[in-house]
Length: 86
Image (cartoon, rainbow, N blue to C red; front, side):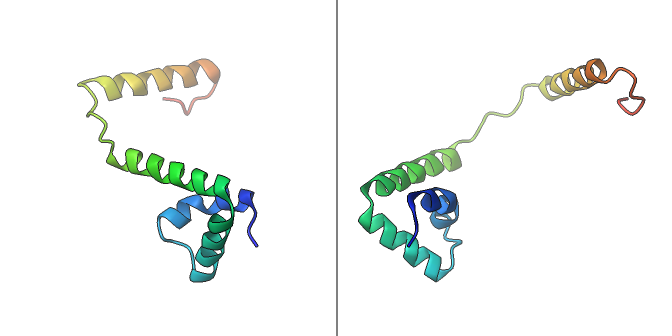
């Protein structure tokens, strides 16, 4: 018998259909018996649907280069004697 914690650990695989049939059946049985996990799984499915449907805008010109420059500078500040930073 699965515990609520187990449901949170397999939720992504369950929603994506990646569980073997025995584990999937165990999840279904637990969801039938546990209203809190049913609510969790319903909310988890909604979050997955929103994330999958989100198309972020492309970066503006120069934005990636600026970001890379900031990372490089932070690394140089963090490790000033490292000759591999350049």
